[in-house]
Amino acid sequence: MIVSVKGAKTRDIKEPDTEPIIRGPHEGFVETLRVNTSLLRRIIKNPNLTFESLKLGKQTNTEINVAYINGIADGKIVEEVKRRLNRIDIDAILESGYVEQLIEDNPLSPFSTIGNSERPDKVAAKLLEGRVAILCEGTPFVLTVPYLFVESLQITEDYYSRPYLSSFIRLIRFLAFLLTLLLPALYVALETFDPEMIPTVLLVTAAASREGIPFPSLVETLIMLIIFELLRESGVRLPRQVGQAVSIVGALVIGDAAVRAGIISAPMVIIGALTGITSFIVTPLLDGIILFRLFLLFSGAAFGLYGITVGLFIMLSHMCSLRSFGVPYLSPVAPTVWKDLKDSLIRAPLRLMKSRPASIEPENLTRANFSTPPNKSGNQRNEKH
Image (tube, rainbow, N blue to C red):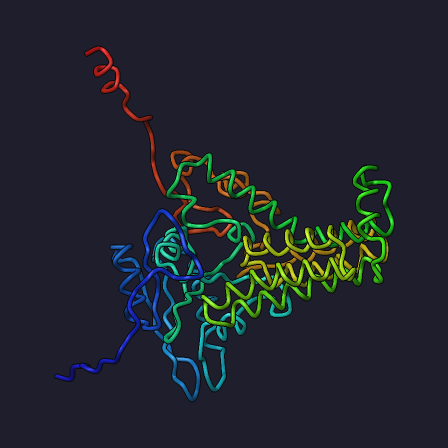
């Protein structure tokens, strides 16, 4: 008998810093592959949960697991995932980000078509919907495919709470996406081309605050966005306690000093702060937001509101052209899958979510069967007593 008894020091299981929640499991994946697979098996106690192992990286021989539930996941997607993984020919796989960039459908797109998470309950929920997970040795981030745009607006806590607040918060996240994308461009377009669109009182106040500013509104906006990105990057790279202090103090001091020195107007500080705060709400879309925010900013500076409108059409056309392992990125909105809209920008009650997402074409669509409403006779008897 040959038994592997090797062991090594591993990180303890704790709540991931990147996806904190209030209600729900407070445990996350770690860098050890076997621990991660055991976390998934502890949630999904089903013999159909399948892990297929392979090694990637000619020098590192990094172990990769492809996870799916046999009988739920679409067999064509599973085979496509394995085909793309087997085609990888590279010296080293040091993190799941290598795998993500080498197997995605649109490597040049700023929008990611492969999801990632550190939460076992989130990955388990995606497996139960018919998706495929890719686990990589040495990283707590697990990839999931197919990945749709609406997943960027969803968190696991949405399903642990009642639907009304969850739906409202999802709409707030979508509003945050629009604000962080459009606010700088709208400010420049209205200041430069369409001041008549601004209410008179607000226009007079904005004009007074811009008096003495040596830069045009486009340069002013670029300065503010660059300053905010510098503060955000410094806050992320420094130790947590120091980073938070640097971000807060730096934003207050620099913003106040810039306004007093006449470099940036007060409305621009408000626009920059709102743009930065709302970007933290939709972090999965941050790459695409930064690129298209600049694209819309220059379009608005060149052509006003007309340029922003054309830029939005270009962005939407690009997003409509994206696919994630054959599934349209904007499903279930474009193309419209009516039965999946109950879990898109809003979250319907669990009793109405009887089927898995048809957009990703799982083999088994039925998720639940609530044939009768809850029995209320017991409540009626208590009222009589």
